[in-house]
Image 1 (cartoon, rainbow, N blue to C red):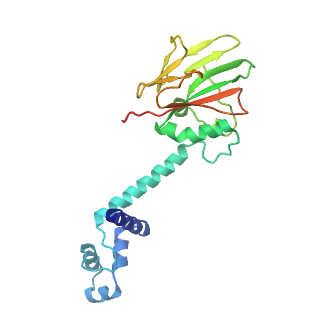
Image 2 (cartoon, rainbow, N blue to C red; image 1 turned 45 degrees about the vertical axis):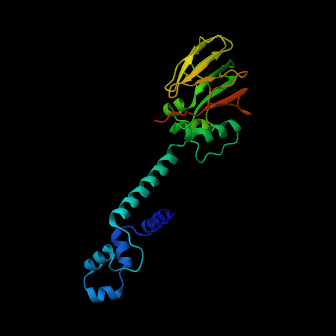
Image 3 (spheres, rainbow, N blue to C red; image 1 turned 60 degrees about the vertical axis):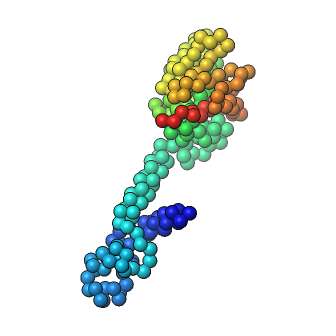
Amino acid sequence: MAQDDAMTAVDNIVTQFNTYEDFLDSQITTVDLYYLEDEGLARQLVELGYRGTGEIVKREDFEARKAAIEIARLAERNQKKTLTSAGKDLRDNFLKALAVREEDNRTGKVSSVIFIRDKNTHGQEISGYIDYAHRLKNEDFEVYFSGKKRLLPRTTDLSFYNWDSHVVVCNSSSNYQVIADNPDGLLFKYKRDRKILNVDPKAQPGDNSTRIPIQTDLYIQAVIFDHVSRRKN
């Protein structure tokens, strides 16, 4: 607990002063300057702990914590920039569900597979499974979260089926290997931990995986499968 208190004290000082010299100056009294007649010497005595009116903080601790706080601030700022769902007025449950999962899919904490069934621009019924993290990495989702376009399966996704033309396409992605020759239905093997994701609605989805149907006005049917990898990098 004492260590936590010390860290909190350093953080308070680091956020209060721009430089270590500013902190040292705050510890120097007018009496110190009167007798020492040297600001540099006064700072040195405070740094060494011989003078001062408050907390003693070493220069290396101040500068290390200052750098760590700045790195964390920049990382948070960059993360907000990369979240294309941030600040969007999301009305539909499907888009809300994607937004909730965006950050975790970008960072690899969760790997989501999206099933969508609907009609394309030609009025043909299509369905397919989408590797959400893979799509996030390779295209700008701002058009989907802003409502300019609808997210639909493509022939380049994990699987694609056109119910009118009976075209069937399967592709492995950067995250999943497609197992299409399984007699009981389509399976996806997550490459990171080699766990099997079973998308059959009558079966269990698999270890560390969940199946969540989404009530949405955007599609005929939408389901999201979330897989949490237990493998540590």
